[in-house]
Structure formats: C-alpha cells, structure tokens
Length: 314
Image (cartoon, rainbow, N blue to C red; front, top):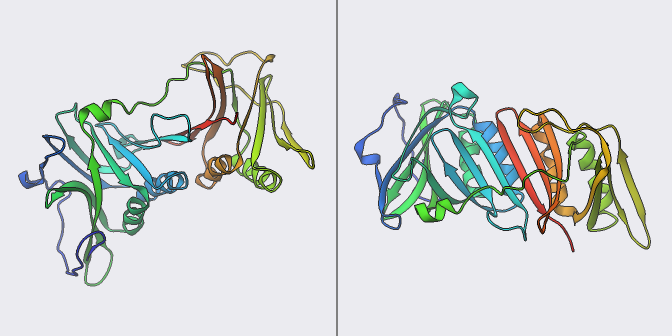
C-alpha cells in the first residue's frame, strides 16, 4: 500500500534484508547539488513518535538534522520571537538510540538536514509503531525528495506499506545556520517539580489569564502564578535542587540570585504536557544577560533530550 503523499497499491512481500543497500538509493538532489544517502531500520518507533507529537503541538513545520550519532528535530530555529524547540535522539540502538541499523553519507560531513511536515512524519511513525520491520530512507522521485518509509505489517498474508513524506533538503550553507542557542550560565537554574503537577497548575491559571508569571531564585524557590485586577493566584515550591553543570559541584543556595519572567500561558502548557512522556528530569532555567531574556525548559528522557526556549512577554 503506497499512501499519501503517493499511489495506492497492495501486495504481499517476502523477507527483507535489514542491511540491503543498493547504488540506486543514492540521492542526487539538484537543489543541493551533491549526492547523499540515508537509510535506517527503526527500533524504538514509539519513542520517536512521542517526541514528534510533542513538537507537533508547537508547530506542524520542523527540520530534521541527521548526523552519524544522533537525530535532531528542530522547531522555529534561529528566532527568539517564538518558542524554539530542539529535540535530540540518539541514533544507534546499542547506545540507547532509535535505529536498529543506520547508514548516512553526504558531502557535508555526513550530515543531512530536511524540512518536513511533522504531522505527516508522525502519521508515518504511527503506522510503523507496531510493524514487524520499518525502514526509513531518503529517496528521490520525479526530481523531488522524500523520506520514504517501508513498513512490514504483521498480517496474513504479510503486507508492506510504503509512505512517502515530502521533504526539502537543505544545502550545507543552510544547515550550518541551524545551531542550538548558546545561552551561557543561566541566572537561575533549578530541577523543576514534576511536570504533571505543573501542567495542572497551568491549566487553572490559564483559565484566569493568558499570561503567567514565573519567579525563581537559587535558594530553591519557585513561584508560578497570575495577578490581575480581578484575580490573584500563586503556587509555591521550596527546597528545589540546583543541577550541576559540566561535572562541577551543584552551586550553593543563594536567595540573592533571582529572576522573574512573564510568558504566554498556552506555550507553557505545551511544555508541561510533556509529562505524559515521563521524563527523568526537567530543569527550569531563567536567562537574563547580555540583552537576552528567556525561559528555558530542558527535559531529559532517558537517552533523549528536549529543550524549549520560550520568549518572554514585554
């Protein structure tokens, strides 16, 4: 069955070799002007699907950056006027990654960047979630680039589903511009309370006002609330830990190091909805230095990470 994005045809299949890779799978893409190839057998489809769905709540449009060691998915790169999200997923399943086998080659240091519709990408991953085997590869058809999924379903007779998701392959010059923000040492950084509790708090606050204030200090205190002419509600947490950076010791508690920001409540709710992914740890950072003021949430999911860079309200 070839869907979407393509034709429709059903047929049975025989065994597929996981390491099959032919010269025909080289993609020479005219806009990029170089040859490249990408082929991966998925191993943990659900994890990749969960990350993609979380990003899809921020924007349907995203950029996938493939490298030999990891797969990054980025939303709204290069701007602090809208929420920017960077997700990083390890590639090799032996290292806790999502690909059983993985091969990538390009003339750009074996890196490939693709603009993609995240809703279509998540649909393909959903089909592959319970598959016997799912292979993802970069392909070229009628001069256009696709991320093609060959999905072997557990059925009688066995059947394959092909889903072609249209992509735009970025040039090396465009890819090099995609770099995660360097924010330095945050003014305040704390290990946040459980996201599910924060999500419940935010839902109540969003019913009062569309802007939510957040205050924190290095003594381990966090305050989230709204304050209007008609309503006032604050929620407090104390004794939160400050994470160590780069193997250093955790910083001492210091109530004089403090910061406050106001952010869009609907954006904050999208961050906290990641609680369904059961993160190992979430770090809340407030950056207020060198003319940059941001609220940053760093979410650690086993071998994966997601970092949200939220703009503050004036």
